[in-house]
Image (cartoon, rainbow, N blue to C red; front, top):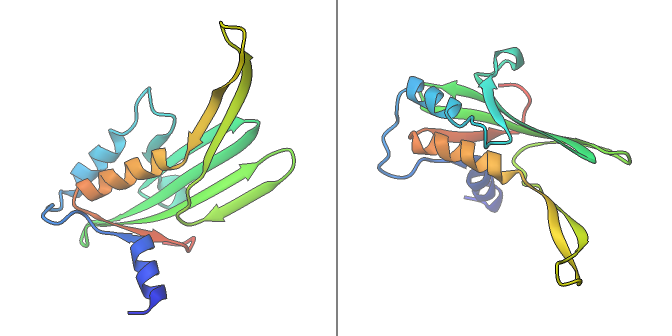
Length: 155
């Protein structure tokens, strides 16, 4: 196996842990929808309008408007989820778009004066795209299904 094949396989296909039996499609659907909640800054929803079974989406607006989406198509016969990850960012200075597995981490700090009168930095904003991606991926793998990231727009 060549280096490219090894990297391609490791990065784009994730297998469930050994010994985990695949659960039903209904169980996986329920598990994905159960990821939604009041403490989660993103949502998993029906993806029919986008031609998918599910879409996990995180819209972030903080000086930069950033949208992360994962479109998922379930293949019940193979116990596999095809996933297309996309990132779109618009700021006052630029516009960026990308497709494929990628991680983005962003932090902002504010300089403040503490109770002791000394100035110090306080983290005022934090964002890590892995918070959503890893949660969705783990849910799929724990259900015994394979995760296959695609770079193509079409399923």
